[in-house]
Picture 1 (cartoon, rainbow, N blue to C red):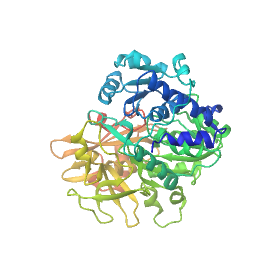
Picture 2: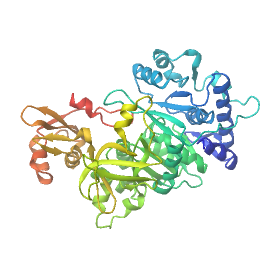
Picture 3: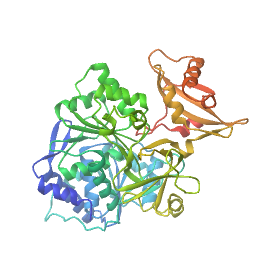
Picture 4: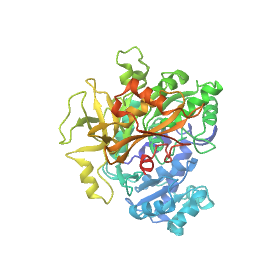
Length: 504
């Protein structure tokens, strides 16, 4: 089944319900969104020659047109390639060449970068342009949704490429439909009047959650800023209401700081789903105290199993009386309903509860492989299991706690040190706002622990103070050998800290 059937269905079933908003202004209802999407799909086919299975790239910041562009591509039976809009032209050129994109849909501000990357002007359509407006107007009979098999590719998602050339993750219609089913069973229900606000990039996880909202006729809100602004989100929560937000932990941190500083009303926020990086325990306690302990859900996933490995439900987070609540709060929850999760040793054998190993996952959400990269596929998919490269531990109740990416583990003097454990401790100090711990080469120890810190109010503190703090919570050998105070940590467009840059 083509996942575009979700929009086709809602265009009929929820025809006059508001679908797309810019700020708090309704632009289209579902009937109109469906008609524009079908017309754009027909234009891709007749004007640009896009055939089923062809790749069509979207290189755009968040915009109202993004949603219809995404659905029009799969409506036509093609494969959408959502590209991080902050990529350099050289990086974009690689993605366009590797994917073999036939057409590029681009926002006006990024049009020059697309040209620099080698996009064919005759196969480039600028969102919102006069040509685009003509493309979304129906000319003749509506184009039906092109039939696709469950294992046909719907999306080609390129990984961040922090460890080399980005890889194109093949996400099938089955993968995305299973992901959508898991949203309802493990993350949140979508109720009448709910609204998803796209403050994080629609090219990434936030955009993937559109399918659940489309299926239930939810509203899709693109902020006027096109991105993340805490004051704007608070205002939208008040005027739009029933707001659901997917955000990286750094975004949650900034939103909570704003609410705490202003005393803003948060009753218009329904659900805040966080993921894409570690949410430290102390930050989560603060967030729940400020925003309410029944608004948060955590998900853990990868592009290779989009948004669907584990989930920590609002019920588990809100159950503060549970004797293991502190441990559960620090976990990433339990396996989502349509996947299996296990932790294995170096030989691939399952580890008993409480032992640390690599996290593996299998199920209908797991990709069939990487585009044009059989070697990477063979390394990552083994005996039906996706090897995530993450290190974690399962408890007896099935809660998974991540330690780190396997590549981030620091081996010092023959002992494994997990950076997140050290980061959790350092963040207990009120003058440490952000921290990233990495390993750096050392002739004597192999690697030593180095902490990069961003100061909060009051400025940096002495190394001895942080040493004493670590001494209260973790073994001596895990303490950083070096503390480096910096103005900010390097991050990608989604807010993930780029530890490769810190390692130098």
